[in-house]
Image (cartoon, rainbow, N blue to C red; front, side):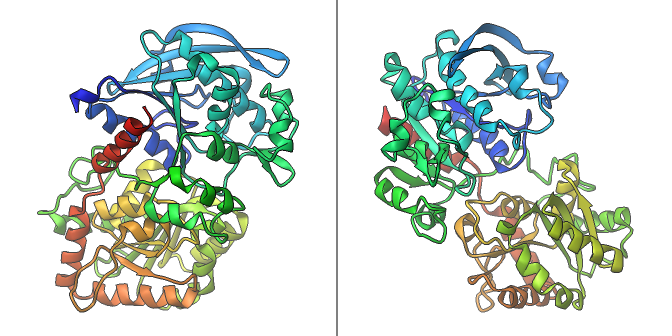
Length: 479
């Protein structure tokens, strides 16, 4: 791929592992640029400099420049800083007023915060030595105004193209129409002429779909689904209108980060040949959680944001029937109170069968992934999903609903050929899900079949190499 090293890509994201991460976007925003660079592409990351970024990184940054960024009538300070992490150039946009916060998202002024970030990304280009990007790769609503701002305010960069990746269409970044004039220095025609209008507000997501040169989603099935009313979040018509530039590219998994043979977080390392050592991780986690230590009882895990999207209402609907089975259930996550209260009650009532951990710990998540026999992810919709990919990498079979990336990655078990990578069900129905869980538990009892399924899941290739090449092809087409 050395012939493509002339391509310069600026990868803009609101979160990037290991600096800041709240979900799958953070993983993608590190793993994809990492793979692209290994394929000869000069890709560089740009992100906000959050308060939560560990000091071991911020203490080594190099200050490049400081300059003013127009935010409506104001000129806000911006510092451009740089760090080389694992041979990936990473730029930080520094402004303590906007980014010295306890959380990445959810502030009352998110519209202003990310209006500043979008404009700051474009203003920063003139200070990047020997680097003018051919393509700016934007990710989710937090970068959604970059394509429009580029066209409206930066005619000197008319050769720069934009690609926008939809990681989750549900979160659109909708704010008051006044944001156009007061923060983005745009006139109200963009609202009046329905260019960015969504309901009674302005949508960063809609703007990106309309003004970017290419659009991608994080799985082929999700690209098809979001053109339908049920999944389209009110933008299905616009997406169908722009499907000539819409591509579905499956997210990958960083096999250097998630590797049961080298992972320092798990209790006992193992590979395909040493699969039988996997059970020691279950026994160790049972001991740590104070649950009965039993290698034969199947452990079902849920590692998830506890929100409606993730299919938790299905689980609640049949939870007592699930507990009548010989299983243990381990839950890690945080989210809506109605879910945390429900699972907390059952964890206290059935401590030998249910254990919950509220919050998020990457180390504990990996211990749970590897200790489990089955990973439950019955999402209402799922753009791609990373949990099922991690589970399979650790020899844990996913139980999923056939939607989005779950449909694209989990080959369902065929009881006649004994092949598959997990278990799946089609309809958003609690008892259909329960039937598939029962099938998985029954299959688990056949050790030979289960071993072959688990090893097949571990061997399945969901690395980034193939998907990264598809992005390169899109970049080439734009340039």
